[in-house]
Image (cartoon, rainbow, N blue to C red; front, side):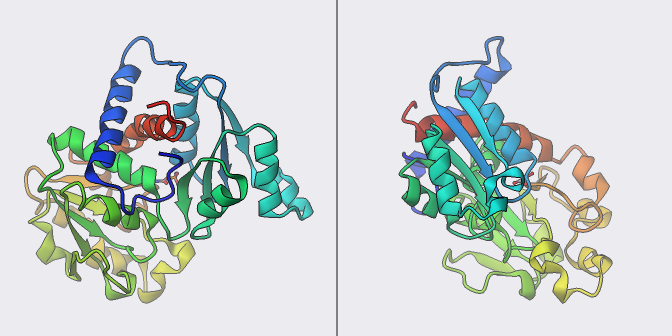
Length: 301
Ligand code: CP
């Protein structure tokens, strides 16, 4: 594997190998000796054009645990401000000795362009509404660790699916891993096409009880997602995981969310902070899965 731009087309064995590798790294991180030298001498450069807390820091931590040198490019204090182009910027990062670029950008397909321009392995850390492959892998790892297996799990992806790169990654990979995915949301936030052939529902209440995993998506107000709703409370009453809906979940059902969460919009405090919530486990699993992806991208696994 050279870089990771998309999960589309990856086979079950390839996805399974990444999850297995992440489980091994997870055990390494629980032990006394957390560091390895698999990527010693390698420079991993993070190139984030959109805000991030989880993804940026977990990639940096993952690279450090593998012994890599980490450079962080910050567009706001860079020569982009003096008019340098994106292409010249990433060629500069390559000339500075980057061996692998981790790219987040608001434009769909930009990580692929960067890979083409530089010839370097690139890991997509989120491209606009495109995909967020390592979030999907972290979530698959979280579910597999919690339930023991992915095959046959019934997951509802709820909310702003149209704008969600997380949802698109899930739709390309989770059915391959045996997860039964249903999309649940208002028509205005559902995808315009369904190349995955998954079930689509517009009524959360009728779909809720049959789910093992209620996966809530952030309402992306910055991408115009709230436009179809007169108020936040109108959205929450139809598609939010409220206290009432929480009490109707199957006893073994879990709640997931990629973060950051909008409390009181798609999720209530009791759901976010309660015992069913795997949200912080998703964050924690972001480190070993990114170790697995970086190692595979550099041919170390
Ligand atoms: N889930 C996710 O991508 O979070 P960040 O934007 O904080 O990285």
